[in-house]
Amino acid sequence: MTDILVTIREMVVGGKFKEIEKQVQQAVDSGTDLNRLINEALISAMDIVGKRFADGDIYVPEMLVSAKTMKQGLDIIKPLLKSGEAEHRGTIVMGTVKGDLHDIGKNLVTMMMEGAGFRIIDLGVDVKIEDLIDTVKKEEVDVLGLSALLTTTMPEMQNVIEALVEAGLRNQVKVIVGGAPIDQGFADKIGADGFGADAVEAVQLARELIVEK
Ligand code: B1M
Image (tube, rainbow, N blue to C red; front, side, top):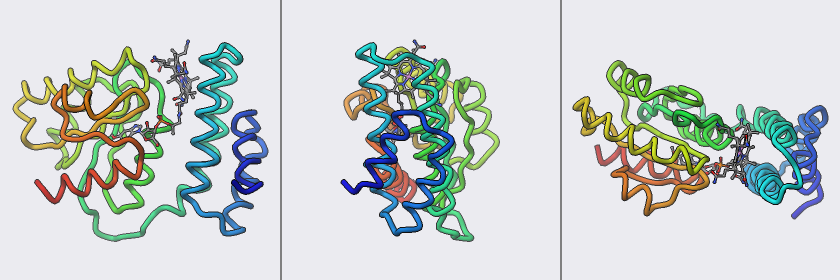
């Protein structure tokens, strides 16, 4: 890994939010590959932070400052991922399920989806089922993307799918799920149409599902 990627990863781990923008901008200007910047520096920093939290070496405030630092780094990269396509390829509603406040992964997926030319309606975090259902009813939604980071909020994804069935909307929209504790087996079990392990997979999946529709 190059020095600049190591430096950025350490800045996120250390929560250096005042310095991160300059460093990421420098990496971009020097031609660093954006995927490596995202995966090897920013995402891998959050893995380190997660491990330290699980081991009891750091606490929620430190985790929060690292999250803020990562977001600021991502904000520099975000405009560079936009494809600038005039016509959108389909509409995707994104949200982190009720009870869950983690949004870094969801935002990353959203950014990549936008970059791939989809219209995104981002409902944010802690999203109530009623809000998801209302949006699917009002907008021409092709894909509903749900994110969950906590084992305690994973079951909410199944509740959303059941609510779509009850509202008679299940056949109108494809549901994709993701987040650190989610896997293909869970997605199959709850009747989702697909699982994305990361943002790149999520974009690929959305493309395939929209063609299928
Ligand atoms: Co939280 N947290 N957290 N946290 N946090 C985890 C998830 C945890 C694993 C840490 C740990 O113990 N090792 C643990 C969960 C344990 C469990 O459920 N078994 C945990 C905990 C316990 C908690 C609290 C309960 C702590 C507390 O208060 N005691 C609390 C819960 C709050 C709540 O949600 N109600 C909490 C709070 C927080 C912060 C607010 C401090 C902060 C979040 C800030 C924010 O998001 N704005 C935070 C953070 C930063 C983390 C870790 C360290 C990092 C998460 C992250 O951003 N990763 C996390 C440990 C970890 O995951 N390593 C942890 C980077 C991100 C790019 O990855 O989100 O996985 P990820 O997204 C990936 C893929 O999963 C995928 O693509 C993304 C890009 O590759 N993906 C999708 C995600 N969504 C997708 C959707 C798709 C497709 C793919 O389709 C729709």
